Length: 256
Image (cartoon, rainbow, N blue to C red; front, side, top):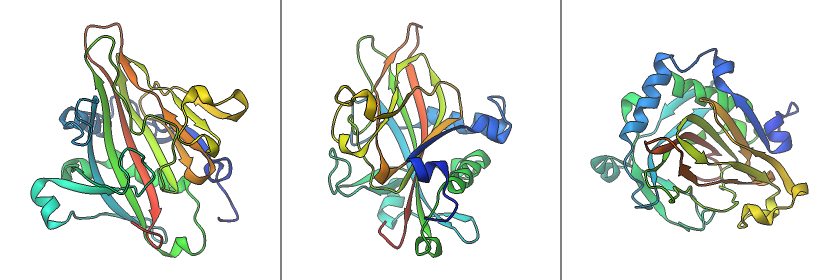
């Protein structure tokens, strides 16, 4: 890593409030446009009935110039409005499966706040001398957990402490409404595959809830394991929702 490590690269996790970092609030036009995109998320085709809705896009970031470009889908994926997402064997629910996920629209991809988030995320990462001269692959996920029925839960994937296989993963809360649960746990790596109750207090590096729009956290994958809990509908007479923007970063010299 570089001679000037970030908190994220040093301790394995960090947290921010991007509303404060960017000097914006919920009335910002770009925020409102990005939030509106979550009203158009289709159900996750690989997890029907889970309460999970999502879209996905792929990009390339050039560390030396800080330029970012969106990647095209394959011809067959483009015809179907999809982008491919592959995690190797890091997600036990989809081992060595390329998931064709609904694509994020060009309009949303060009949202200034989304692009500013990508630049902010890069500024928190640190790369080896070799990685810094290769493009970085950036996967961007719009994910919404949505639950309407009392007594049921909407769950993230995988529903256990895990590592993603991407060196850095950032999670940005776009909004939560009438939702209970969804707590985040960051633990030491040996708890991969375990449940939160299996982690003793000494190995709980961080345990928190994101409540405010544009709160964010990130993990350095090899240093920690992490978990996000399911959500339940709150007391109000409307669905419970938790909307997240995920961005994962991978050096292209390793793999895509």
